[in-house]
Image (tube, rainbow, N blue to C red; front, side, top):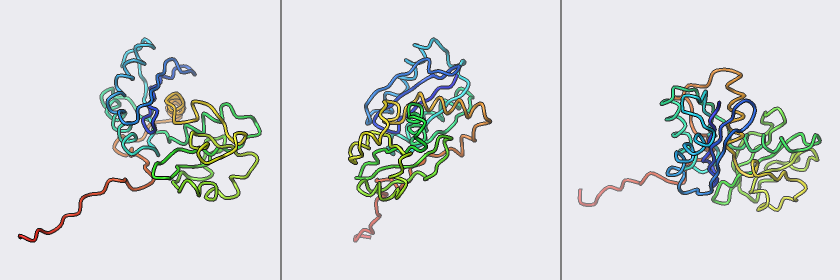
Length: 231
């Protein structure tokens, strides 16, 4: 039983993965209130599934990239739950989860997926994954208008598709995109599924070593201290 969660985008979600399937999940769209809503949704999902905290074998959360505040909320909340339950926590990339969801429905001719996630400030988070889950182009943030140029010739390859809500804003043709709810934004069902695979593969990293993957400096800056003329 793996509890997955994400708050890295406008859509928050929580899901329970057990025996090869999602047994309960809940989503909401409220980017500014992840901290207020997340734990209520966790309780709701567990109630629907009819499970207790002791039934959870591991947790999984996406560590970014995504909203600065959202990623912080998700990672800190997941760490707190892992400590309280004394369970392992497996990190999953936001773009990785989107690509995995897209591959689930993509045809066999699709060999690569480029997930696109709005990074605000006119920028896009983007990466390229193959069917094994490996990154053939590492996650990065680029000006939205330069996304396709950043990907270079790979963006024109017939075996590559895009996914994510941000694809429409870039004017990418519909037949070059994979359109599913789970690949539009990071989805807790897929985060739990990928976490379950990592649980089966080996131990989780130390909680103290798990950090958000912001990919860029935060918008907020420390205030500059100015010497007082009266000193």
